[in-house]
Length: 166
Image 1 (cartoon, one colour):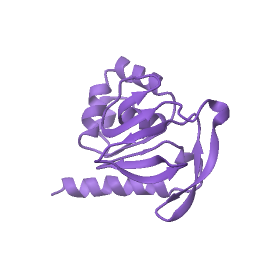
Image 2: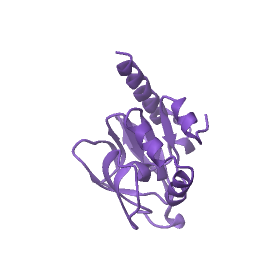
Image 3: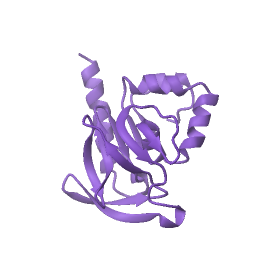
Image 4: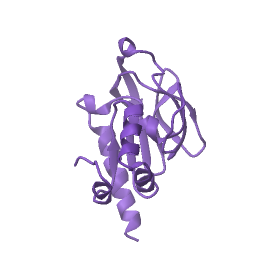
């Protein structure tokens, strides 16, 4: 479901923050007074951030610095691979399987804290990272036919629900 209000957040068990423009997303979160609600949601429920969503989940953002939710111990550089013309489709390995990764004005993860776990790298740089209930990708898995990364996130949501049931 599309999530635009605090009531929408309360009705879901996990959230995907998609790609887009992180500065615009922050302005809209602040305009609608949702920043704190989203942060609270992330303190108890899983979030999967792709591209701009990864920027929002990081604890530190560079180029330029901006506010973020700080839910994952990562330093992320906005537009790290360059401009739109530098976008690319590449192959990465996830769990021993090659998958297609679509990088569009993608951020680069410059630092991965000790609590975070790198699931995949591209050119020596982390591109798929998890920390506890959260997951980030600096690429767009939704633009391929492979749904394995989304299935992985759904499994994280199910696992979190089973933990909360006890």
